[in-house]
Length: 182
Picture (cartoon, rainbow, N blue to C red):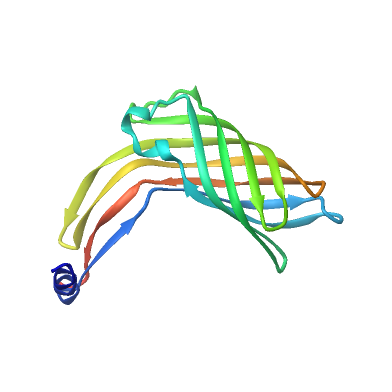
């Protein structure tokens, strides 16, 4: 029955979509191994508390993520865990939004080495819960949506110091149907 409904939706020019909640960080990476190396760093994962509206003003946060670094033609894959308090030092005129400061301890285990570091992020965040529809389809979103920046410094088990800085993004759950043909 589900296959039939999916085929019917596709025949009508409609495509269902779903995006899971995610926390993504993308930045530049600088390392002290053999002189100085510069690369790209990406974390993509999930902060479990970002789905709970009662926890929007929480005092701590944690993140579980997959991690990727690229130095020239060398790729490093691994995992990361970050946790720390949340502070709200800056007032915002919007009662549904916050600017928050997140100092965190972060641990990484990768194909090259393990590391421990300190990270500070600042985010503009709001909690979204709603639906929208028009002639092109409809959808719902639920969870925290945020954009910000971060800086991180860490020490790797191979006696390497690493500094990373970049953008951070939180994406709520997004699901719906998009119709291409009218």
